[in-house]
Length: 113
Image (tube, rainbow, N blue to C red):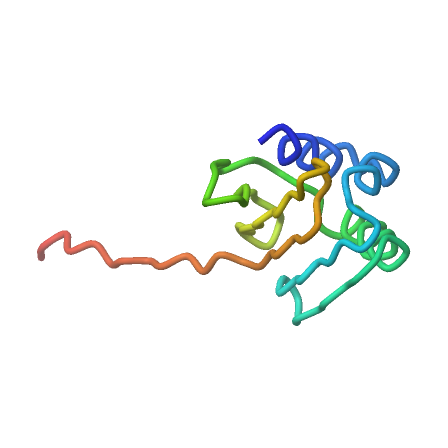
């Protein structure tokens, strides 16, 4: 969980150096936030994060927990809530990140007439 918290802090601080330090050299990122993207390797990830820091800063944290070997994080950006799954290897480096928007389901309230 410490790596997931460090990832969140690097994102909140818009710290490219810290974000890149957390990732393995061959790490991959699968993003479905605005069209599906698959990004592999640190140079491509650095370009992705520069844009993400500018366009979608973290506005708040909804939840953080474990699911098997992955950390699962829900956070809020201007466009809604994003879920991210972070896989961490035995060297305590991120080797895979998967993220995408959470679809909010609105249930109409029956207030009676």
